[in-house]
Amino acid sequence: MEAAEALRHQARSCAALGSPMYADLLDRLADDCAAGGPTARVLRDHQDVPGPTAVALRLLGSVHRLVLERRAGALALSWPSVGGTWEPGTGAAAVLALLEERPDEVRARLDRPPQTNEVGRACALLGGLLHLPDALRLPVQLVELGASAGLNLLADRFVVTEGPGPGGAGGRVLQGDPASGVRLEGAWAGRELRPWPGLEVVERLGCDPHPVDPTTTEGRLALTAYVWPDQVHRLERLRGALAVAADHPVDVRRSTAAELVDALELREGCTTVVWHSVMWQYLDVAEQDHVVRRLEELGRAAGPHDPLVHLALEPRRRGAGTPHDFWVVLRTWPGPPEEVVVGRSVAHGMPTTWL
Image (cartoon, rainbow, N blue to C red; front, side, top):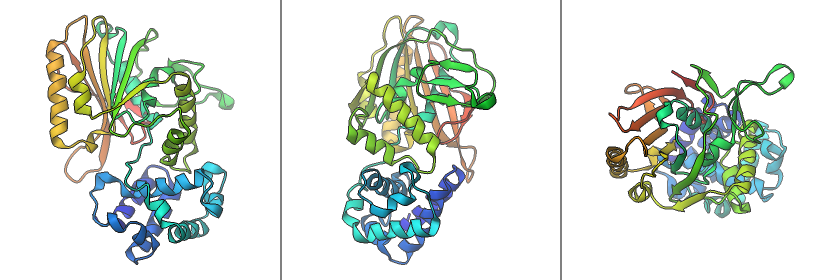
């Protein structure tokens, strides 16, 4: 689609997902782009882009990165993530001035795909695990495809609670570490899940074509830049997860999903869990098919002492022309590997409703 159209499309998504700041800004940038202004000049090499490339989020992430690095001057006064207040007219004008004055610095990061490593999605993945029967509740070998910085490989070190109690006190713990710095409050709705108090993750492995090291300043900036700055709750979750990752680093390898599943082996005495969230669309059809075939091959070899679980949080349409829903889908082996939809979520994972 044309760049201006891509900006407007993302503006609608931001409005629906609770970011009035980005919704307003993207509409204004779309107008400027259509008029041939500085937005069009910055996006000159991205004027006809497929939707999954998320050029609008790349642009905003690049601008946010400059703000976080204190390289955007007065624009910081409009950015809530650094203590500013968004005022539509002055804020958009400051962004356009930045694009006009420093186009090369903004353009430099447009070729990198957005990497939020959305921590809220951990609630959907962790809840998906709680659907496993006792026979599959063995120590877990956890594998994540499209893991980015691997933060959600640490999901068991977060805590899911009911909504805040009276006076803002924390709600009842539903799963996880009560002392965790990542509190996913009010994350679950619908059917109550059976806790897994003895959940033990004995191995964590992820892959990503562009892995991010969350223990470095560069990695932390890269992740923070793609969080929408008026969504303070998401920023707080990310900061908490970065602190957990600093204490418990995980192995995220630079590889494709196909390469990782090809090398994957089941582990005796463990349930191997392969999970992913909102990354499937970035694989071409050939790689999607390859991953599915390899998981089915591993599934045929799985037994009661080395079972396999495939858990996914991915967008799907109920029908042609309908909006995307985000479904939590579970497949288990041994046994018939029927796909079971266990929950319905939202783009950023919270809340997830169990069916």
